[in-house]
Image (cartoon, rainbow, N blue to C red; front, side, top):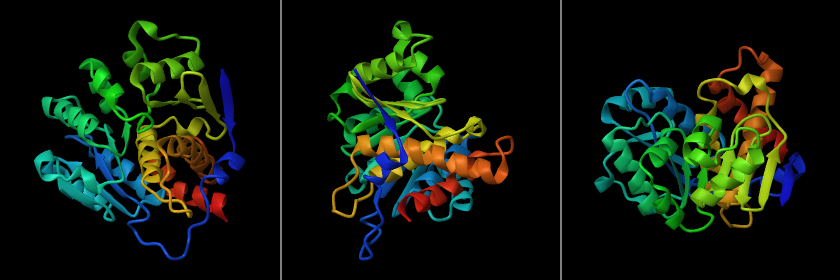
Length: 286
């Protein structure tokens, strides 16, 4: 079984300085399906994470009543009503679903629709994962193209997904078990976040600090990974889901480290992580 360490050197082989002649289409068109009554902030934070990670265009599919919150919270993004009969999924390079989504009947339909109909890199987080666990959508998830899906559970969500297969003491086992059960690149969040990219292959992150244990931190990570997955590298190829996940957790942790250095761990909030994502990428590409 192979376990690799994610370091700055690792990430710098993937994230490079941008070419001067690029346009926003090269930087990725991103769809974020998130938010519900009382949870609009999750959609805002995910969108900010994607934009700070370099996305060229971010659109957020939310209930219409949340449009004012999202458009004030992240004016660089645009809003779409969450009606998939009017959303052309083919125009997006990567998508995320789950932050603040809730588990209503319409949310279950949205998760199923994205799993079954979106062909690009799809990131599932938060209620997206709870919907999968509570509605047994594992078969649909495993039918997706190999290497096109990323899941980002914290330990509680991992326990719901794995059920009786969850091991309370072996994080690396759980990360690999998540990959095997879902067919998705599995980001098991926590201290030294693990990324399982196969049954026998994991990566351990080396950035991050206790200040990141704050509400909304995972929403920003979802946005970062999705934002990276939509982008083209200088050679013209787009980030793979695996590259986006491995680099995303490092960038997210580095943003947390830079934020903690400036603000301290106690006062760090998720919005700081989104802001410092830009500075983390600057540090990596200067």
